[in-house]
Length: 322
Image (cartoon, rainbow, N blue to C red):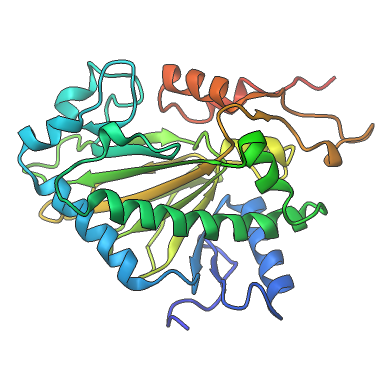
């Protein structure tokens, strides 16, 4: 067991030990995840089963990419009207609202894979990220099984809904790179937002910078080594009919201007063609739907047009209650 991984559910972002989730500890872990999702929308997950070697390799190959000369990274740059690829603050304004006022990053789809923006350099970038994304998908579906059980529906309910008729979820990454800074004036980061997807698994380095909004205060998350920072996205809030709300969060550079910072996120959500609305099993006369349904493709299009702007995306789907 990791030394920092004793389950904690108190004043800080909860820490949950995932060891034994498929055995005698399942009910305890299920309750802890449900409580964390309800009260914080965030938790750190330890002893999750992913090999530390793979986690190290995906960090290393990502740093190698960001260290490349700009002309090499430009080969997979974000193009106008598209959000996948490499982006730098100098390019952001001409691309889309999602890239504006943001730090340097790389973003791609893995299900379905966008091969045209997979860098050829470093040579192992694509194969390493594909292997990593597959492992995160399996972990995400194990966590979603426990969340389904917390909603008193069969454990495969959420994954079936999100896999849809193609039996494949939406899986994407976003790697944010915060380089050392020459000055501390208005450093670029990632603006306040909630994730438009269902659930996010973030692998951070040892430099803190992620903050979550709790009771109108920004709370820093100090990453635990080899743990994942997991958060609820808009689609899970909708599917759970508001029980598990997504949460505003933002990314900042290291407080030490001489230090770089790297964060690697995998987003799991519904297939683009899936219609996402509150689970029918949760609705009755006393519990009407709180959100209107739409395809994930439609939701993402509006999110991209709006940009990173708090929880305005999900607010647009809320149904006024009389």
